[in-house]
Image (tube, rainbow, N blue to C red):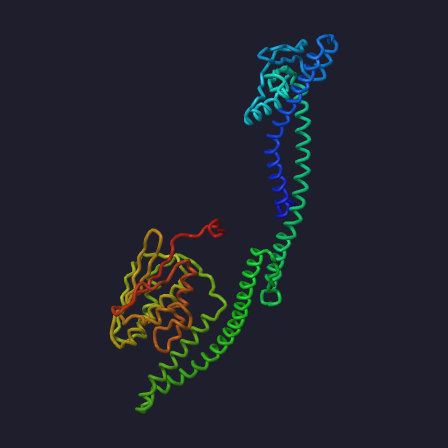
Length: 466
């Protein structure tokens, strides 16, 4: 629809505003027309009365003709402090109102004009004014309102018609001017955006600023800057995707090779050679770290984690499985404590929640082993009206400053030497998939605390649409 376009609305608003301006002009104009009309009747009546004063022998027929030409019923002239009825005829009705035009305020003239314009009743009114050329103190006439109102309506219609023509003409000129100066450049920007959206990787589709209007030029330059940056980011994303695919393939094959190497290392471990016995633990540790790195890279290199299959599960069983898995790998001086009520039920994906807890507990175990001191790893849980909360605590040496800066950033948040920094990134991503958060509560010389918060509320369709 035309009125739904910028050009159409501008055209309609221009016509409306010009018409409103003409209305403000029309009101005082119609009041001035009424005043001039009555002043004209006063002048005609004065001329007729002067003709009678010049010749006292005017007959009745000529007197009636003079009154008809003047458009009045009676003429009263005050001269030399004497009020004299100069011309007179029968009036069809009594006088309904008196209007004194001598120094009448503009507001009064406007109000009287509007009343007359909207009152179709036939009336006889008295009009008082000053005679021209000082031919007396004042002149009074009585006149019908019907010719006055008819003349006012005719004048008003002509004014409104002229206003409409001016409005349409002005709006048309403004329409073409605005379309040329604003609408066409805006349409060009929209076309450029659509073209860029079709193939954002094509640098040829980046807009080239050409608008002469400063605001539009600023918008085009801002759009060009955004498109240039986005194209660069898309290219970088493609390169990273290709790199990630290549790394995932290499990691997959490397993991298989390392698994075979690990089997051979297991056999070598049974050797009685002192040198072999001394070297095997280091070899096994290196191979184990390499296998873990490959597995973490493969897990993170997937296009996306599958959405969690949310079910109501007993949290204590998941925590126990994760703790037992790490207890087997831990040294004897590391203890594990579980403080989770057996009846605590949470809504989560059991496999993904196990992976999150396993990552956090493994990080805590490795931190204690790196510090070469015994310690306690505690997993506790609770709930409120809105959240389930799981806490993983250790009394290790705390996270180094560098690790805290990029804690959940892949390949940058490693807390130990040789770590890949993927465990926390994967864990945080899995928790976000549940609508929850994983955060570092505190870390220091007395230990580190990670907290998982899972929401109890379910997002409705209306909330999802927002």
